[in-house]
Image 1 (cartoon, rainbow over the protein chains, first blue to last red):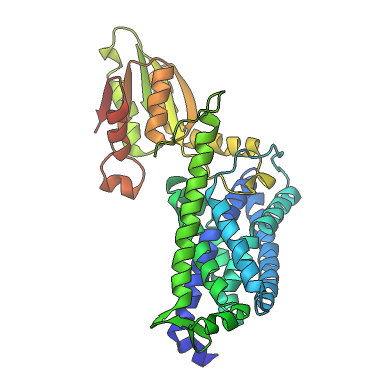
Image 2 (tube, chains in turn brown, green; image 1 turned 90 degrees about the vertical axis):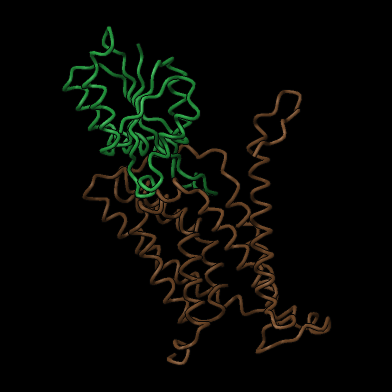
Length: 252
Length: 142
C-alpha cells in the first residue's frame, strides 16, 4: 500500500475519483438540500445525518460490487456505453418535475434522501468504479473524502449549480472521458486491438507514445458534450414550434 | 408613477431602497413600488422528479427569496411606503426587466454592488445588464 501511495498514478486517480464524485453528486446534493429544507430546523441535521449515513454505506457497497464486476470481459464495454448514455441524459434538461408532497416529517425526508441516492447514484457508482481502475484503496479513500463534502456542502453545491450551470456540462464531459477510457481497456478488446497493431505497455494499449485510453477519453468527453448540448438545444426549440411544426432554427 | 426596486439582500441593494425612501418626495404622488428579488432556477436534472416535487421547489424559492426581501421590506414599512413584493425565478437581469415591462413600471431602481465576490470584481454586472436590456429609465444607486 505504501508503494501505491508514492506513485503519481495513485494521486491522479484519487483526484479523478473525488472530482467525478463531486461533479456527479450535484443531483444528490440538490435533493438533499431541498428535502431537508422542509423540516423544522432542529430535525434538518438529523435528516441529513441519517439519510446520508445510510447513503454512504449503500454507495460504498454498490461501488465495490461494480469494481469487481468491471474486471470481467465485456462488462467494461457495457458499462462505458451506459455511462455515455447517462452523460448525455445529464445535459438534457428534464421537462417536468413530478408533484410529490413535501416531506415534513423526519422519516419521510430520510426516505427521500435514500431513494434519491439509490436512483441518482448509479452514474456515480459506475464512474467511480471506472476511475478507481481496480484499486480498492483508491476507491474507499476517494469516496470517504468526497461523500461528506457533497452531503455537508449540499446547500453550497446547489447554489453553485444555480449560478454556473456549466458545472453540469463539465460533469457530462467527465462521464464521457471515463466512459471512453473504460471502453478501450476492456480485456475483450485486447485481442482484436493487438491484431490491429496496437502495442501494450503494462496492459495499457498505446499508440506511438500516447496511451490509447487518453485519446478515447478525450473523444468520449467531446462526444458526450456535443451530443448532449445538441439534444438539449433541440428540446428547448421543440415546444416553440408552431401548429404546423415549422420550428424556428434554435438561436444560440 | 410605478417604480420597480430590485434587491438581492446585499447591503448594496439596500442602498437602492434607502435612496428611494430618502427621495420619495421627488415624485408628485407617493410612487407605487414593486419590490422584487430574483432567484436563479434550480438545475433540472434527470430523475430529480422522483425525489423532489414542484411544491417543494416553489417553497424553496419563496423561503430564500423572503430572506433577501426582509430587510428591504422593513425599510419600506418604516418609511410608510406601500409596496407589492414578489420573488421571481429565472435569469436575474432578464427577469427584472420583464417584470418591469409586465407591470408597466416607469423606472427601475437597482444597487450597483451585489452579493458575490465575483460581483465585486465586475462592479455591478447585474446592474449593467439591466441597464443594457431595459427599455425604461434605470436608476443605478452607488
